[in-house]
Amino acid sequence: MSELILGLETSCDETAAALITADGAVLSNVISSQADLHARFGGVVPEVASRRHLELVEPVVSEALVEAEATLSDVAKIGVTQGPGLVGALLVGLSYAKGLSWAAQIPLAPVDHLHGHVASLFLGDDALEPPFLCLLASGGHTLVLVVNDHAGFEVVGGTRDDAAGEAFDKGARLLGLGYPGGPALDRLARTGDPSTHTFPIARVDGLDFSFSGVKTALLYAVRELDETALAERRADLAASYELAIVDALLQRIEQAAEHTHMDTIAVVGGVAANSAFRARLATLGARVAPLPLCTDNGAMIASAARYAPNVSKAGYLAVDAYSSR
Ligand code: KG4
Ligand code: ZN
Image (cartoon, rainbow, N blue to C red):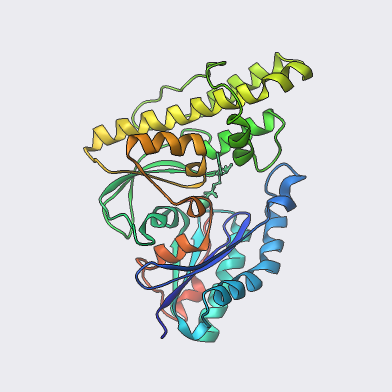
């Protein structure tokens, strides 16, 4: 049969592998999160992440093959995240993919992680066709992208400081919600009133973002409260803080749509999993990546690999990981 694509992702704290068909149907999408392992440190510890990837990569790939009812002989291409991300973590996936490619004689396609997030929109029956305007909001990036074809994108805006996901994580930490913060803040915010506190939306030139101000404003609001008052107000603070971030993202993407004259808006990345954001995007008529494909996963890497060139054997041994673009 030999027509499936295996996608492998190890850029941060998720060890993930997936199999998709040549036309973008997801057959399996296995994600092993290391979140519990890093929780007691309050964030991802790069060396701990690398070691865990090393333990998990083989079983996760095997599981993806089993779930897809496939074997390596069905795989026509291996897509693997090359960067950006934690270099040690990336090297585990990249080295494993090179070894597998070599041993099983399967072509290798190194994939950019950000291209992977965009390519989460190219999967399934309801795949989105370029051109479209895309907001990529994750833990490491907040970018406005013009996507003219399946193979890449043009960056038209970005963050000057923190990424939106980072702002969620830092806000969650200030509110005592632990790690990973974004999903915890999302859950808590559902029980709060977003109109109780007004947090600032940064005014930045062009199509850029800034989230350091809103985080500092939350820090000051929390500092003013004693423990009892904070416990009472925590949900309201979470809801108000979330609203400020969501408003900032929505304002920018609408301005970008006007500026670029593009009518289709799409949103991808971990922050696209936020329930308040998804609800607002639905009323806007924007396309949002399916929930299981928002946070890091192997299916989006396999999807990007469909449009990424193969690197020939021997040559791919020199392919190196990169931490930033
Ligand atoms: O795309 P992703 O899995 O990894 C990166 O490429 O960075 O995004 C992870 C980020 C984290 O900052 C996480 O807190 C945030 O996405 N996130 C959320 C939610 N789920 C994940 N932020 C807000 N609400 C959520 N439900
Ligand atoms: Zn990501």
